[in-house]
Image (cartoon, rainbow, N blue to C red; front, side):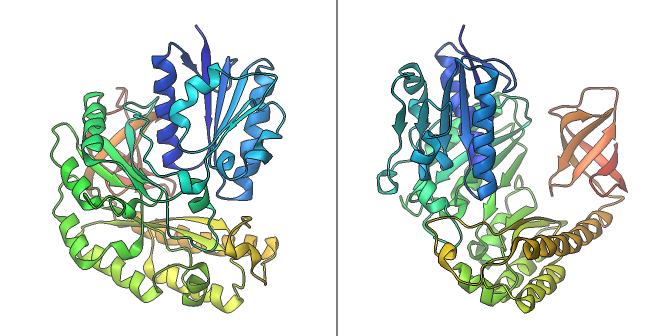
Length: 429
């Protein structure tokens, strides 16, 4: 039996697509093995959000070649899509496969040649249809990602993803519900809806909205939680928030991508909202959901970001009090408008600003979790860590409890008793 191994970088969409490709290989008689073992085929699902992502993708390709010099190595995904010639020059690559060709991967691998390297990448304008991969199950996970949308038409000035993923393409609601039922049948109690620009779902087809999908998932028996991926802030109108608050299975956790807390910086980023609008949306969500978690992404060192603009971001972030934040440094992406902007910020300044924001966000995360102490809430347990079983609450707080029993996959009521910063210690009720 031939063996195939996967190495995945990047977002939840990549995670979903990797699982879909695993199923294709399994149906063709392959055995999926761990990525650090010898295999006949290695699939590297690449990311290109930052230059660091590109570098990690190259490292993974070289690592796979060292594991088995005779293996077929396929580089797939976003880095392969936007820089196929560059990826093809990495020593050891046999196949370069762009987005919307992952469903063909088994045939492409089996027809790979050592003599002729193959590049299977379509330009952005040809990425017209949603490519269905059908994950159906997940290796070693209790939470299932479900991809419902691909592509982005926003063209933020710093972002390469619209070029890597193409135009907005939405999956049919019927297909979404069918795969959701399969995931539920396979024992998953929580489904995370994901996409490249989730709130654009249905704009290309006009046959449904993200809210329609959520309402549809609220019905199946066996599913306990629905969690949403990253959301465009302006999607969360007053009416949308009220409608969402009626959906019992929807987790009180909203990831609203801020990027900057300064209006001048947001304008250069080509973001479509102001800080005042963002703040009003957060206020409205908190009025409609109890113990709701607001998480975000914040970028430091965007071209032209002055000390005053950064101070405004710090003040705004502190005023919001996010329950968690992913802070990252601006990275030049060739082909984007921001790459051509003057006043690029030195790395040392980006680094220092990241540390300052991290301190602010860690404090707000601590404060949010302190307010949860003493409450009883549901925790979906995922894995054992150093004698504790770890899981997450509905509002995405990591929790650990002592237990002699394997709790993986169970959803139990837990009293939150002690904040350890990185997680909360709980006791099963």
